Length: 224
Image (cartoon, rainbow, N blue to C red; front, side, top):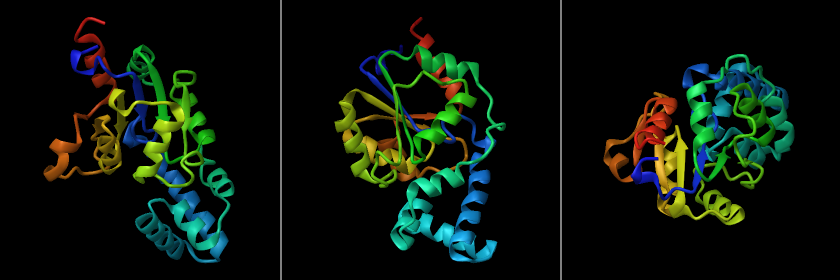
């Protein structure tokens, strides 16, 4: 392990577009399912459903949060429906699998998805059994990242010291509460979100283009 990360005891990873490449684009499939759900719920055409969906995402942080606030939707019903997508776009990356397996300490997934979906993704990526737990949207009490309360609740619930934790995430804005708590932050810059040069230096400790390469560097540079 490189000396700069020798203090890390908790390795926290986002799920989608972080543990697998953005190009897999599972969200495109989920996006269609969300439109279908909203269309069936509200009796609107696909164009109107998409507009509603994007409005809820913008105003509430996730489509689910908007549907719960505006229509009292059952989150389990919604998540079961929208996450019912094939996983054949995903492939194991031996560099990621090996790298995560070699990380010392606790390994966790922190996601705005749910644990059932996360389990399917991890299985498709060959990562089953490598993480202690999935801290999902249900455990977040449906306050999605980047709501600060979820980060603090996760640390308290799981007995995590933020100063000994590292968080890997593809959406830079989701690193803000982690950094505020004292976590080391890693931004997977895969093109899905542009960073803001005005705050990158203060917010992001490591900017990564390829997770497998980065894991290899931090684990082997000092000969581990």
